[in-house]
Length: 580
Image (cartoon, rainbow, N blue to C red; front, top):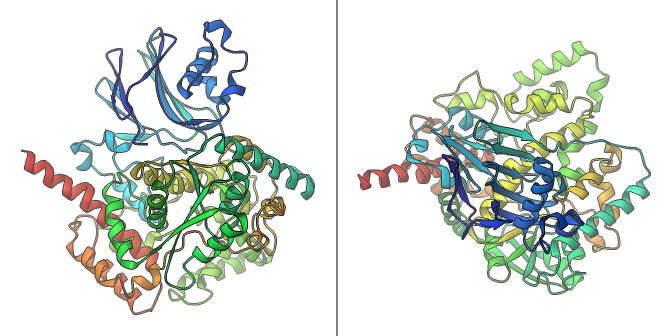
């Protein structure tokens, strides 16, 4: 899954790197493609006769055929994960698109009279890009733990957003959205939603499994991955499952996964990750990553992928369930904060000022602040690492002109009619999902030459999930209520309402003990004095180490930046110097 690189220059389309070659269809279209189309037969039914073609045999032929009939609207007929570039020789036009959820990445770069497209960002990064990092993107990274897709660390390289396409003609470059992922809740009975959810998930898993023989699945102790495995086993009884965990109590799902695998009658292969293995893997992971991603779950995911690679070529995974069905506990926050809605505005203002004056870490401080601060002024997605004030303390080039709300403002405007829980889902669907979750998954898949498939991120599943009102997803005691009801009788009973863990990493403990020296050495040895105040970072690490506050995620986010800078900037500069 290394991807492709192609360009159009002087009215000529050239394949440059990645896949073996571009496919020629109907002697008119050249196309290169990564991903998988799951509705080939349905999308092409009755649409090949005019082309004197016996029938499509590949993903490339499907896209070319649909484009021949529908032009840009061809994308509306596709169900799957994809990124592609199609060149129409007759009209001298380049057309490129990305799937609605952003499962497959797609980047582009305009250089002189050339347009370059790639599914691997590394293919587009030149030495000049390494010397012109975007400080705006770096500042956003320290808020989100990843760089939001609307921005770029390398200013000359842009991302084709999920559900968008590019069209390049001899006279212009068009960039447009072809699908809008929005929620439209309707009122139906819980029973009706439950039945529909079960049916659409069964259909999606069947499409994703198909007749594949070499197939596995990541398995935790939670309902998302367990549901995928339980449904997939119906179509491939020999499916293998893969799990990772840690020795520290409360940070491993291996025991739960083994019990679940036994109950489902499938093989489970697992690995225990030690602090030493973890720290060694971080460097390897970042060395091959062109972008910044500080999600700690990326490292255990890479170990799971490494184990899977030894046994299968395709792995099913449960990403997307939380964003579609309301799975994050954060989405229940409005219930906890509802009492503030009944207080006079004047009282809320007083409480807000009080919350800001209380010492960091004091019990109740965060609760008061969240309850008295409008959602659009504080919520940026599933992870918020540093506040603006905190970034000022260690960022040498911090600017007041950049704010996290630059990323979320337009999204909140589009979601203005939703309740607060649904607004949070909407923000995550359009930021966290593709910017963190899927970007991490794609990077891992690329390193270990796996194809990951995401049954929850199927457009038919989304069309059902978008109709669910908040009250059937979030209850007083649980999240994803309708989804859990739909899986009754399919997954083992203990899994149905088990608390979500999701690749937890014991960073809180390790950065105080086993990984403290490693972290300190990383900070001291880094060469980022033009960007980061290392003394401020060392103070943050030591404050965490003595147990005064839990700064593990903050320290980790900075550590990832330092390691990324070492491999992507410092080492690259050394290599360039040696070549001169």
